[in-house]
Amino acid sequence: MVQRSARSDLSTSDQHRRDGGRGDRPSRRQPANTHATKALLTLSAVASIAGSVLAMSVAAYHEETPAATDQDGSQFTPPFPREALVSRLFAPGRDLTPIAPQLPYVEIAQLPPPPVLEIVADTAARGPQPTTSSGATAPHGVTSGQAPAASSSISPAPAPQPVPPRQPRVVVQPRQVQQPAARTRSSR
Amino acid sequence: MDAKRDRPSNLQSADSTADGKSVATFVVGLTIGQLAGAFFLWLWSPTLVEALLQERSKLYWFLSRSTGIVGYVLLSGVVGTGLLLSTKFARRWPGIQVALDLHRYVSLLSLVMVSLHVFLLLGDRWGNYTPKQLVLPFTATQYRPFWVGLGQIGLYSFLLVYGSFWMRRWIGSSGWRRLHYLSYGCWFLSTIHGIFAGTDTPFLVPVYEIAAGFVFFGLVVRAASSLFSRQRSLATGSSIR
Image (cartoon, one colour):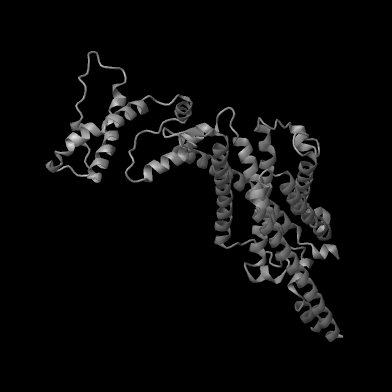
């Protein structure tokens, strides 16, 4: 009796070693949460792999994609396709136009500076004269946020027939002309 | 004496059958899960999937690295929990049987990940590994053959330790236990392989630190538990006399 109680007093470690690490309960019954734990472990492993692959893809994309130059001359890396989609979906005020493929960004960087800048510069140089003349008509309700007054103040040159090929770029002009108009108004 | 210590053979065969079912379920589940994951990834971002499946894609390389990292983390968990299994911790929570079951399952999961880590390299067009190079240690001369070879030896020792679950009826408990000491070497070789052959080592330093800390913690607890139980059994023996 004494010996038996002494045996039962042996540490669990020794008992476990005696069993060869198999435990002392021969029953194969397992609680249900064992299976849930296994499933969770497997899912976590697979999710970790998927997450790592995504992270590596994004990192490799940013490493390998050459920096493109924006129209204002600043360098940027074209966004990863998924990031671009997410930023378009969640950024307020963005239009949901289809995402352009990445290649055109690079092509833009390789193109010479667009001639539209020259047109704007010329317009800016000639800007003060028409704005000054329209400045007299400011009491008509022109506020700082409104641009159409400036565009209406410019007397567009009569477009010769046929229409010049760069007509779409000229559309940018009214927005650029707004700046001298505002400056003139604030200087007064 | 050894025969007394060993469990009855009918229980062992029941274990083997259950293990076979468990492995089959695991492999089928993992395959279905990966296919479902690939499908949902394609739904989520077809552009991304197309980019990954290009001819010059590095998908195999990324997958190999990812499975290597996950396999190493799981292996560290297996070694650490294996050390804690033989102490009172596992008996109190979650119970020896459950802890042992999870220990074996995570071993299997880790083994699958590490095997994927090796064999996915066959699809990598940048490394151009041959099956022979992947099987024979120190023959892959493309990239740090010594450190890669250590990883291969680590995998073989892991296979041996995992296989010892099935070999127990032939090698006995003491042989099984002795074989299990190989898991320390396996973990050490894997760590060395990861640090010196891994391309992500700068980012994975915290992972190595945590893994080493966990294994070291298990070792300390195991040693302390063994020392304590020896003293206790000595004290009990002297009181009986």
